[in-house]
Length: 261
Length: 200
Image (cartoon, chains in turn yellow, purple):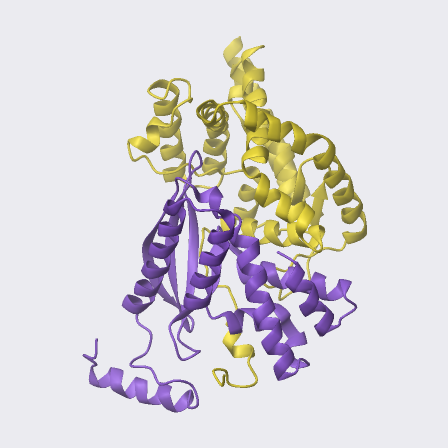
């Protein structure tokens, strides 16, 4: 009985994925051709800037103060453990996405990583996998899966609370709420641990990288444009597997020869 | 060092003719030389991190390293974008100086985030007209991340013209920033220079 139920839900999940992919193919706004590495396609800039103002206010009044005190209050070693625990619980979702992308080696490595860290790493509080030279996690997500499947990036969107994203990435975030097998296996309250740990981990990062984030949000001349540029560059890098050949040659833009000092 | 093959010599002669007016250099940029440059930069940065000195002296250290190993001229010009074409030679010079100080303050004060961290060069490969030197940065409590140094000899010297951290180009990010500073100064180059001197 239970078996039939699970086959059924897998079929349902499959159907849902196909549906999402179709929607994503049709729904992501088409960008004009010839976009360079750091240029975002941003037809919704007016709305995005409003959301950005909201996000900055939220950060200033809530996220930043809580994150800073969390990071100051909690010992570093403990913060690291919570972050590793949260990351470990996200690995099964990366495995599912790697499989969907046909990246079997990545899926196998991530599975091994999850098994090792959940056991030898004591429920993921320690990163035993890295100690044993198991490759770094793929951190595959459904936005990336859509990219591999040929869905275009679509327009840039700044989401409330979650921050910079694209149309494709946003679809991915929604789908990834369902791609983690653990959510189907764990019961209450175990299924809440992961979420709680992710929130803690995120606060921890807000506190730890406070200077970097502050410099973007509060010190740059146009924090919206800066956040957009950083997001687009970093996201395209992750999807392109880290090749840096797409930059322009600044020396080509020179009209006058340099070195005449 | 001066063991140059015949082909290397011809290439150098062409390069020399092409960049006449720039300082002569011994041979075209090689992976060894690009890597050597970044090894030196990384060595100096690691030394600064390990020194655990005050923020102000780290800013000074950073400016010295940046000035010595980076092509500040081309980075500054590139962040100014098309506006660099309407800048006079003296405006360009003051902009470059202001830009150097701004970068040193902005990034130098963040050096303490690297405390307990380590940078190591992991590889090098030729890309287009430059060499891309890959480094791995390991900070406390976070997974290692990748930094690329883009090294070129097109200025006449081996210098890096961009730093790319996990795909984020310092030069392109600063172009966004300089454009915004220019906008808030109504497109005035002189006001932008004055603004830069106060920023970072």
